[in-house]
Image (cartoon, rainbow, N blue to C red):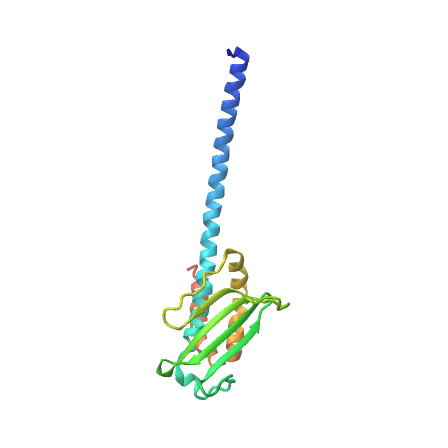
Amino acid sequence: MKLSAKNEVVYSQNLVGSRSSALSSTRHSGGVLRLTRQIGRVIDRMRKEVETVTRGILGLLTKQEDFTNWEGTWFDPFCKAFDAVFYSPVYKWRLFGIMNGEEGMAWQLQCCLDNAMKEKADLVVYYTSTRGAVDSVLLCLQDVQGVHSELPVFINEMVKQFPFLTKRLQPLLDAADYAEKNGW
């Protein structure tokens, strides 16, 4: 089959047009790719901040002597076990701690999507522990921003439960303010 001169020109123009649109879509996808990488870095940073804040606070609560005169309530005074639940707007936070002999308190923290209807068990979206080799649960993409944005609720509730945390957190807060003011 022979193509006429007109068809060849049209074909060439379509080829050029498609090549230029391919180039522009490549430029566009390059921007999308950069944006995707940037979003990925932000999400990863939020995940790391959730892990750092939660494990950092739990790490400040491990000394056995902190709990000898503690005025809080043990749900099991015999084995010195503590269990607390508090709520943020979207999540239910459950904190469980048990005195671990000379090692002090060992903690487990769950952050769950609250199932108010109680038709099913709460969905754990984040979990961490101070017990040895227990790994944290990696936050899913859909929950990272929500859990990260509710970290202040977690911190405030922890300070209510353990007032001596205020004194321990202040140097960290001062360092964070300094870093933020100096663009770190």
